[in-house]
Image (cartoon, rainbow, N blue to C red):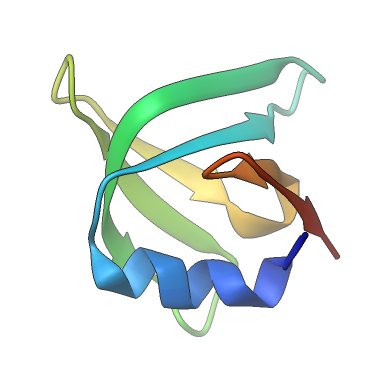
Length: 74
């Protein structure tokens, strides 16, 4: 298990990750290949770039339920 506070450390490495998070609508969003592009240290969000499409997504770190195959806990 990983604490949600460790997500910022992982994001700052800017290495390829996989993750799952829960959307505002309650849907689980799985991403197999992404690279964190920025982390907003004073806030709760970080940006990821989806490798297959190049799309940039903003993710709230408190909604992440899995990163690199490990469960994320609050």
